[in-house]
Image 1 (tube, rainbow, N blue to C red):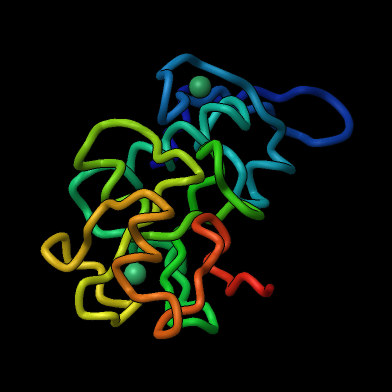
Image 2: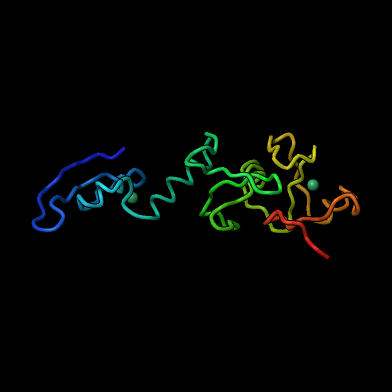
Amino acid sequence: MKRIIKAKKSGKRYGFIYTLECNECHKDFQISGYRFNDGVGKFCSFSCRTRYRMKRLTGNKSYNWRGGRIKTSYGYVRVYAPNHPHNRFGYVLEHRLIIEKKIGRYLKPTEVVHHKNEITGDNRIENLELLDYIAHNRNHGFQKHIPRNPITGRFIKF
Ligand SMILES: [Zn+2]
Ligand SMILES: [Zn+2]
């Protein structure tokens, strides 16, 4: 939460300067009263804000904050993870994140997370299986399954 350490008169324009404690690095920082009243003031910097959010995202809690979890047109679930190296517009496919969390590293673009019951929104860990791209296509049988780009989740057209 926002915690005002001290507020002092700064003179003309904004009235007050607030000294606040950053929720992430816990250092003091200062913002103008104008920005403070605008809802700014939990973090000293953009990078602290991002780090804080990433922690929440990779913590034990579910991803349900600020609508950070969205369903795509293919039934896949994306979660907001702007620091992820394979994010697209700030979002990453949730089933990939779940596997990455389990194995403790980022997936290569050639690795595919397969949904065993073929329900793409069913991201329970027991429904997910990590395969390489070729094994995944073989697994489905080529006719049965149009391969998808493992990062975007889109169908690959031939
Ligand atoms: Zn900070
Ligand atoms: Zn599959």
